Amino acid sequence: MPETHESSARHAAPSPVLPEAGEDAPESSGIVGATGHAGGAQGDAALTDGTAPSEPADADDAVSSESAQNATAADAGVGDTADIGGVRVDNRAPAEVLAMAQTRRRTRRQRRTRVLVGVGAALCALLALVLATYAKKQLDAFMAAQQEARRPAPSVVTAELRDFTSTVSATGTIVAGSTADVASEVDGTVAEMRVTEGQDVTEGDVLFVLKNDNLDAAVGRAEAQLGAAKSALAEAQGKYQAAQQAWDAALAADKARAEAQASGVGVGGAASISATAGLVDPSSLASAVEAAETAVQGAQGSYESAVAQADGRTITAPASGTITRLFVKEGTAVVGTSSSDAELRATAGAVSQLAQISDLSTLRAEVRVSQDDIGQLGLNQTATLCFPQIADVSAQATVSHVDSAPVTEEGDAQGASYAVTLLLSSPDPTIRLGSAVTATITTKVVPSAVVIPLAAITTDASKTSYVEVVTLAGNGKDLASRERRQVTILARDGESAAVQGVNAGDELLVGTGEGGDAR
Image 1 (cartoon, rainbow, N blue to C red):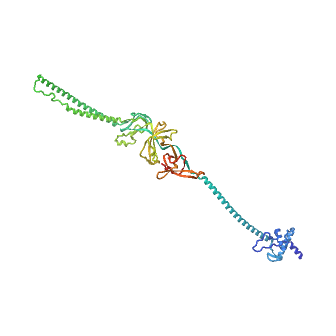
Image 2 (image 1 turned 180 degrees about the horizontal axis):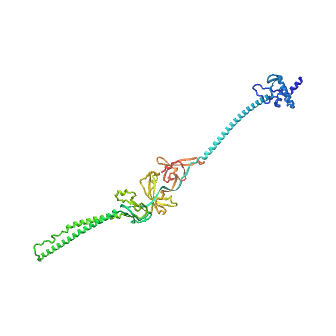
Image 3 (image 1 turned 135 degrees about the vertical axis):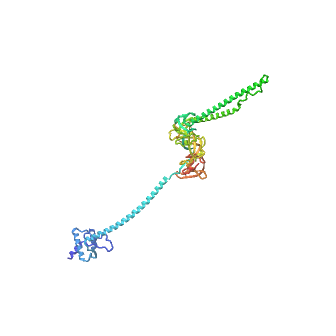
């Protein structure tokens, strides 16, 4: 019936209008099928009958609308779409229309999501760039501030006015003030030890007695030769004396007879014959006596020499002092200083020095001074000695000798150096021979001197010395002024120098690293 159909069509929800190809359906297009939400049905209804969309009155109206839509689509009979009242509507099943609408909504949402993500990423990148730029500026500013804070101020010192003492340091060992070596002039074997190490002795004291049978035999032979010579001399002298007496008596008889003849006292007989006739002239025996005397003198000399050599077996102290070293014991073979016994010299264990006597009443320090400092030393300069191995003990000394030639020993880290002797005055009893010593020798004293560190002095190739006199700016790190000034070094030690050319209170730049060249 036409009336009924029209009424049904009026209450049914029309099929949604399909968008043109390539055009996205607006979200309110209502392409949701018969089961779509009410807004879509109302929108489509507005398109078909020209009235404002309205909600279905109740669930029956919704079902009636869906049935009408299906019927209309069936009546149209043209594929998935039909033209109803001049409007193209979808004839497909509601579930398929709903799926298509959901797909389109997802596509639009994904597209909007991609756009939003892209915009967000761009904004994030822009924000990151802005933040990075800002952070870099802040970091640069912070680093610049830190660098400025860490930038060291120039190393500056102030020249000061004070008495300056130049010193030289040296190291060495303690030795005795004087020493004497004990040796033997003769060969032998130690038979007696009459001293011990550390014993005080006086010059002439017997220290050792050697055994040497050859010397004893030599003395015996010399003594026998001397006795024989003396006997020969006595015999010659006896003969001479007897001949002289007989000769003198004969001469007296001749004289008496001559006097008698002269006085007329009769002395009969032929001419007188001298009473000396037939006697031995004593003058002929005088040479024999002289020869015997010479023989005795020779024998006496030989004997004395033999005795002296034998006496050499008894060894005495050549000087007073303390036995600081012993090199022998009983039975040790000793080679004499005048020995020619090559076999004895080759004997294992044979020695030529028996002991050492030291005068401990005075001590010396033997030290080594580098060739850079030796030019500052002179005799009678004073020194203060310290002893690393003896706590709280020091001593005063004076320079008594400076070697003129350098000494270089293999493996010596100091290189070429000079031996210097320091004589101790009133040494402490705890100071022993061989003790290590450090000496500080005063080489020069400059009163009221301008003193600056050696590190502030630069010396050029011509040995001219300079300093940099500066004034600091208000920030304490920059130089307001800088002046290079020549100076003369009056005296120096290992760290500072007394100079002319700057005033007390002047500020000097240090740290050039060339101060060590100042001499």
